[in-house]
Length: 344
Image (cartoon, rainbow, N blue to C red; front, side, top):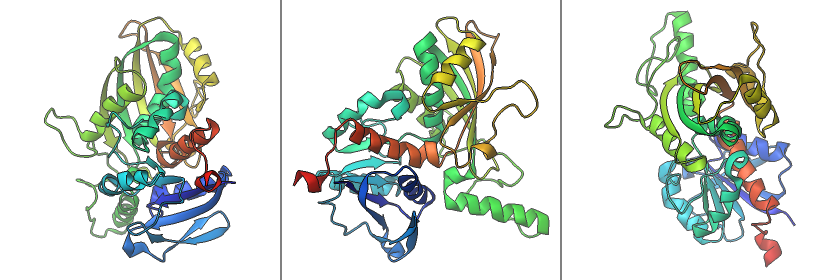
């Protein structure tokens, strides 16, 4: 007996990716339901070689649903996740709505899978921010080896992190540049084509953006509250794939060779680090892949016990859809969740 899985937000970039990954990984689902807002009812989405018709989230009965993969935005999740959880369905939420709730586990399976057992308090599990997910996958094995004191990270985040509207805007603006047409800016605060924007999410009183704050708060919750972290988050004219330049200060000495070996053995990491032209991974190569790629590992001589590295991952997969499905697999593999139909 398999599980019944609902995808809330099935028409969005991440929702569609969730459907692809469920099929790719042969997730043990007997039934998959595509949900979205009323205006999307009847829209068709692909699930393997099948086509699903979208149903309305607002009036769906979750009484026989085991897992709801929620990717419909923070406001929708705040309203619906507790209602869905109250029907005995485990909600794995991709928004920021529940990440900082002490009763909701914030999970990256390669990093803190044991914490998933805490889902029973609200029947909700939070997926981290896309830029945090790949960062902690790279930091975890290094932290276990040498103890991380401080991290300075600069992100280079693709427009798909802003949804379909962000991708459409980059495409339209790029086309406008080449055709000498009017360049329209709607989704981003400044033009994104052939430009970079050091601003993601809203500004906070201290001058950091909410995206930068998320990386700090989430890294502490997932990995270690004692780690000090500062971030600068930048939107770049790339369609898919987030990149990060990471400087790490450790408590204990760790050589470049040690770090490379530790990362090579770590789950979810793939080291491609040749000191030659092209001997590193760019976001273009990461698109459609599951791994967090690590390159450019080198000593940072400006601090004691310092390393610098380059980290790249597909933000729609490891940063969102894949991580959510790995959480669901974790629940099943640890026998924390039985299908309702079987239980009945």
